[in-house]
Each structure stands twice: as structure tokens, then as C-alpha cells.
Image (cartoon, rainbow, N blue to C red; front, side, top):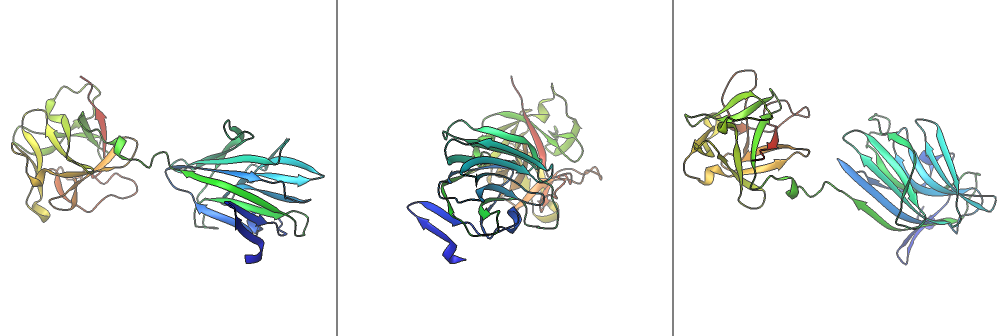
Length: 317
């Protein structure tokens, strides 16, 4: 209800209403968790909570988990709860002002909750929290600021401030191996990309950590805004797209042209896709036919094993 929340002097004030548990709390503000990793931190002033009030930061999911401050018997207690494990941890608080933090790794569907009494040093609570995918809430896990009363009455209010959402892997630019010599291995068949002496881009042999074949080595040359050119280190030239549609072959050219420009699409953790700016399609192949590389692929599937996703490894001289 609009009468039970307020923005005042940089604080979000959530008044507590009766609820039987976290999922039934009326005054909850959520933010979709951002993958593959994100971290939410907020300062909670619980000094205006009344008897039976609880307020904090949660991971809204089924099962859910949260860390909160409970006002009970004129005491403030920090409480951690993990619904999946039916685990509750209580810690006494000397002050009702505390920082709460939730970190999620959404590739592996795990999270952790922590708190700090000085805003600097955070202490984890409980074990690793599982974030299973399920169809009951369907929206995925959400960070949640919440406040409710456990004694079936209206209470005081919680004041939240300085909510901060960090995405440690959001800056993809540092993941591009600009100026480095690399090998590219197709995830579909584990075979390295190779520039053969006849000027074609072909599937080579399976990945080797100490590869000596210079046809499997490419220098990544920066052309700005995520655009790159790949130069084969065996002297056959630059990876270049010829033709359109079904004839969009990937060849090696001694001269760099506009058809040599590729947009490096970072897939995180040493994986990438290569979008031709000549065809506006991805470089790839069908791993089951023995065909050569072409640049007429629309993209990849979630499994990344359809021939358009590569892992790259830097070659150290």
C-alpha cells in the first residue's frame, strides 16, 4: 500500500505489515539478479522496528534465503535463514544499524549472504545457498528488500539506504586478447581452427597445450569498439570473408580488407564468438559434416556445441 512506504532523505522506509513468512510479506522491493555474477549491498537502520518486526535483504526464490534484523524483547538479533536447508543462525547485535550483502553466481546457481557492522569487513553467514531453477515463481532469483511483522500486527518501519548493485564481470573489454597470439578451439568438436597453406580456414587437430603448428596461431589485432582482425602466424594472411550467404567462405587474404573485420563477442571465461561485419553472421561450421568454416551462421544454442563458439588460449612465447 502506498501509505506504508516512503522515500525520505535518501532512505527507503518500509513499514511492517503482518505476514506469515518472507514470501507473504507485502512490503518487499525486488531487483532481478544479474548474471553471471552480481552482488547487492545495502545499509539497514532497524532502530524504528517494533516488537516482532523483521527486515532485511533476501534472495527471493523457492526455496528462499535471507539475512535480516529481528526486533524481539527489546533486543536486536541478526538472523540468517535458508529455507532449503531449514537452517537458522542468530547473532546478537549491539547496534540496529548494519550492512547486508548478497552475492550470486548464477552460472552455478549458488549464493552467499553476509553482514558487516562497520560497513567494511563482511562476515559470511551459513553455508553456500542453492538457487535451483523451478516453475513456481518462474522469474528467477531476485534480490529483495523486505520488512514484515511476525506477530500478526502492524509495527514500525525499516530504513534502507545506499543500495548498490555490482556486476564484476560486466566490463567485457578486458576479456579481449588484444595484441596477443592465441589458438581457437571449437567447443563442438575440440578441434583447433587452422589456416591451411591453401588459404582456407579449416578444422585442425584436437587442442594441444604446446602446439607448434603456426597455422593454428592467430594474432588478434585491435580495430576499435570490439572489432578485431585475425592474422594467421603461418604467413597465409588475414582471416577474410568472401561472398555472401551459403558461399560465405572464410579464407586467408594477404591484404586486410573490410571483409576482414570481425566483431569479437565475449562469452566469458575464455570463450567467444566471431561475427563477420561483412555478412552480419557468425563464423562457424557443422562439426558432423567435415565442412570448412563459413560465415553464415545465425548464432549458437545454450549448449554452445553447434560449431560457432570457441575457447581461446593465449600462446606465451
